[in-house]
Image (cartoon, rainbow, N blue to C red; front, side, top):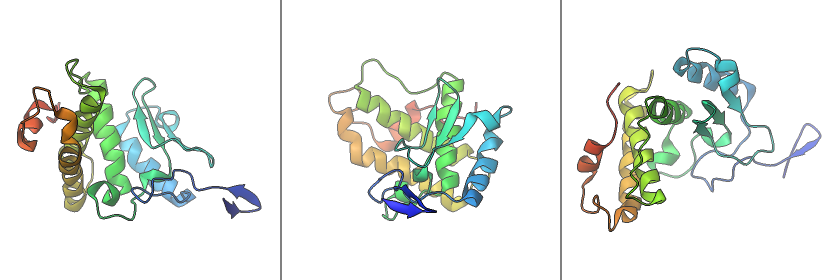
Length: 183
């Protein structure tokens, strides 16, 4: 527990260094909100939500509500992995240009012949690749980190594809089956 202004507060999301776990400042929240609202045409005030000081839920896009939920793990972590390096802007782009755009276009990755883990892997890869290509106002380094994130996810979890029609696919072959085009 960390004591802040006379109340007990704990670190929000324990990501074991993979992503941030320190409370977000008001300035960080404002910068994140201002960037995230670029992906919404209306109702951004309602659809971009920040975790309270006690939530342990991860940052993520909730398609059923069209809500971006933001917690401390929006910030980079301390490891050298691509996911840990992702800036908060890259993380927002992953959620909104990646997952949200796919959900709104009904292109979220799903193949009933695959396990949940395999579908999740391919959806996460798709989100990072889409964000790398189409994320708003990202630097070249942020785009590279997002692409590296997709590559690392594939390399670290391709065992989820064992026994499936994608078992022997390379990263580039997998990329061809994902929805990464602009529209």
